[in-house]
Image: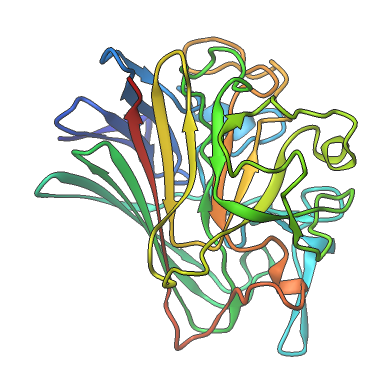
Length: 354
């Protein structure tokens, strides 16, 4: 089932709710492609909203520190060093919205535009197809880029996100979703007791500006090793140099994709909340994932149930390529050419442990 309603009395901004046969539902607005709600059952069948967000549009527009709750991120996710890059001998200057750096597409990234929307349905699934035409030089990026993001809810409690893009001029592209999760329910304290597994032997340390240093280092023997499940706070170390920079975990992990084809989905991460039994598995075609533990949340923002979002009140698993790749030799090639198609898929799969 799919329902459509005006979002906060804005006629061109709608709220689409997809519901499956298990009662799980996902609400998405065409403003920024934001996932505003994900209702999933616990081990006893009790439904609860497990993603952070707001009830009203103006809260997304005016939120302190712009947390990007649930939004589509683009044209290039994560940080671009010094807000510039050079392509085919031409230097492009981007909007500096994170100190000297460019973050998540700029002041008016894809999280701040109104997308065209179309609901689709089929056997065992409901989909919302969002499209946006990003004009040449929007936020400083070259090329007209046509973007499609399709959210699909399955009857097996999976939410897939399929991204597709075409350009008429070479341009960097790296899209993701910025959902924050608390599997106890949004606003129900912090997530430090969640048990996390990330299938990655290596991670990317950063500079003081949270730009990857260019190194790719082993997680073995460090606090960044999540190959065996552990609670987020098990190795929490406020004195670790990388922790001091990010005030927690906010690092990109290189996934162990060596034996997989490029288009094959892999289990990148698995998160368990012991009290409710809820499980989130993240499957992706991407080579990396940014693990973020809501370090900038501080209680000033309150969510849909009126509860404050405390420090570490949500975690993100943003599937992507390496940050700042368009400025770093040896990192991923994120330049999309006119004759190419950008395609990638990520799935949030929900379940329970008894």
